[in-house]
Image 1 (tube, rainbow, N blue to C red):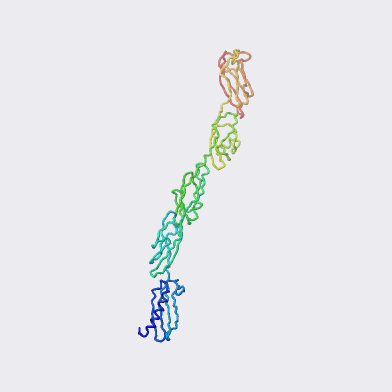
Image 2: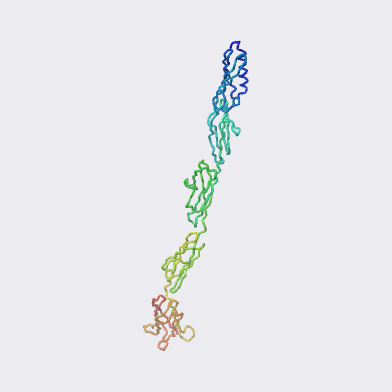
Length: 414
């Protein structure tokens, strides 16, 4: 620089230094260049590196910018100041990592990219931080040029809370119970998969055909979080019926069947149907005495069924009672042969007594049935018959209008 221009250069340098004192910190390393022509105009320019958004001379700068100003000097010398503002973009980055955490887990988030320095809202200064609580996390990253960028991320903690609807089996021993997951909690992201005990994993939240027992329901959401809930399905009390003990029936007996149940009965189905006056009634009548099994299937209000069986035994022996001995000796004891019949006998068609040679000694015909239907005093033709054994033969008509013949012996003793 020629010595004759020293005052001008000195003035320009002072102007530069005064201007640079007001630059942001990031621009204090500005480079400057001086060009001048004697007795004319001095061109003074410098490069100002700024971070995007910093203010230069009160103006925010977001891109490369050229600023100039003209100053009239003394002794005919003017000055043109030019600033070449170089705007450096701020660090543009994302925060990556575990932004969804299951309750009780520890995750990690970090700045995507490499920078000179980091400053987290937690106070940490590392590229990544470990987290176990939800909320917003902010980090300020500073580049090697001193420019800083800011980003924030929200971390959510998933609190799963299963809500179930269950149904017990309707009847003892049945497998028509169910369990359904109604909700896994408002914070749990879909879709979900479900597992009951050790069964296979399924996408449906409904499990059917369950019997009584203890179960564990497990749900897993889209974030991999899981929750389990234990529940119990119980059998109702068993439904049972009782139609009574086995029965012995005789000809002419009228039998009515009854039933009792552990819960009220709403449906009856008796078998064999042809034997009863009603096969769907609570107390049917047996139409005729036979030897057979009677079976009932009953249903209660819950649709539960129970069965019971009884055995009917038919005693087809004819109720005709003839003593095997009598003594018509006038002592007041067993002086007459008394023949009696049960209620199944409606008529004694005939009753005959023969001696040992086959001669008829006594006969009665068409005698109505009654508790005592015949009396014989041991005479024949007005004379007392000798002591000894005699044969009797009887024909009886029964309630079903069938006839039957019975035979036996009696001893006449004096």
